[in-house]
Amino acid sequence: MQDMDVIKKRMAEHIALVEAVTQGDLPARLANVAEKIREALAAGHKVLLCGNGGSAADCQHLAAELVGRFQKERAALPAIALTVDTSILTAIGNDYGFEKVFVRQVEALGQAGDVLLGLSTSGNSLDVLKAAELAKERGLYTVGFTAAGGGRLAELCDVCLAVPVKVTARAQEVHILMGHIICELVEGA
Image (cartoon, rainbow, N blue to C red; front, side):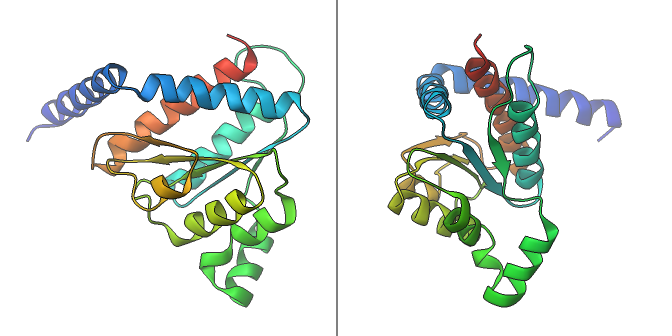
């Protein structure tokens, strides 16, 4: 396949997926998540984010949008990407196992009323699942960003934003779109 064919095909896939997502109930669930985050922040709580690989980068990106700003000048909002402190990640990974890199941080930082966003395209990343389990036990509002089906994460979260596609890249493209929409709504569209 020629370069231009690949480019056009991937862009067409993305457009078709976004159009499909707008036809289902995902927009209503997304609006609900934004409202819950607004309520949590207004009550003095914070947003915690966790995920692996590209999803870890998305966590950092979205936390930066909330702490810094997205589109409007406003007060900083408390958001923490649990993916960024290499000393914490490597110490927990070494001492307890990689599956506990996020749950230990939720144990240390998460409080009832906070929000946990867990990004896992498979919905089965053990470290994200363990964080979601503890977050639920502690009274955090839990949101999963997944691909089609939602995996086990869909069962653990208050809301699962499952993108109806199996291709990780396409799901992650919609995850960042949904994250940006949440940031815009939280910021006060």
